[in-house]
Length: 322
Ligand code: NDP
Image 1 (cartoon, rainbow, N blue to C red):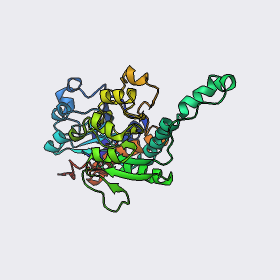
Image 2 (image 1 turned 90 degrees about the horizontal axis):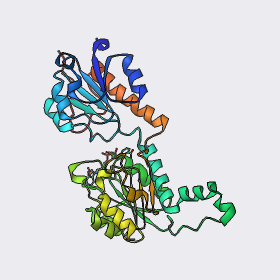
Image 3 (image 1 turned 180 degrees about the horizontal axis):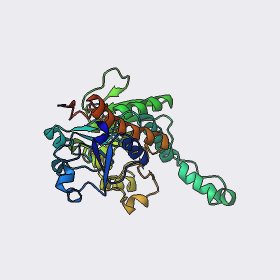
Image 4 (image 1 turned 60 degrees about the vertical axis):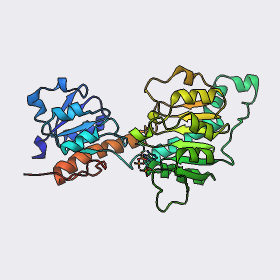
């Protein structure tokens, strides 16, 4: 029975997802999540979706027999989960399997930002060590710093554990304090920024997190302050950040995510006190494979056992059969 279930895959997705799905399902691919690419009769045959990226309300509307949207990635802001919930459609994401990878990347990006390792390596590669001598001492160091984590969720906690091992004092802000953690809680983001000199953002893209790291928060972080963003570019007022980095309002920033990817403002690229990565926090083969498997396993569990493995909080449904 499962062999006849039809899964739609719009756009590109990791090949491993397709290989896994083809073992058990009939897979239909279209170029992108656009209702005009799918005739009504074909749309009616779709029971599930596997997607990496956007899947909006118009697509959900267009698929009358849709039961589940398995989204690749832990952040599912591209999928209209509210519209899915209204229709009784389950949305799944890929939590936990990427925590360690993203936390590792965060520490790497923090070190690159503070100790300027990319610039130091470029110094060697360009022959400047031989010609000009030692790379200049970095004005910034991790030593003696206090880190504030904006979003102490699954990934935030993995970041905190790593930074604790680095000897840093840790504080955090979330909407509600997290039970059973030894870190100091601040009930607002400006208060957290005031209390620390490293601010690490790892919150989801929601209406509430939009441009919350603004000029006032950057001022509170202060002239020795370092901002690291590995959550979503949406969370940062990029104009305010560029001004703060240019004017010495904060010392440096390390960014893996941007407001309008892949368009990174030239003004940001031109700054000497930033370290920039092209959204690679989870981008290793082993972790992307684990994410791919969780996308496929969610669909298999839904159509096989009647419940998804990792539904998002907005859609805690089980499968109606018969
Ligand atoms: P979780 O849901 O486990 O954690 C989210 C955390 O953010 C929670 O502590 C939550 O606490 C807090 N939070 C949510 N909304 C707010 C708010 N308005 N104000 C303050 N805190 C808030 O998610 P994960 O840790 O698994 O992932 C976090 C995000 O990281 C993802 O949604 C994704 O966007 C991003 N990400 C980026 C990657 C990259 O490649 N750069 C890779 C993986 C993830 P509370 O609910 O109490 O407020």
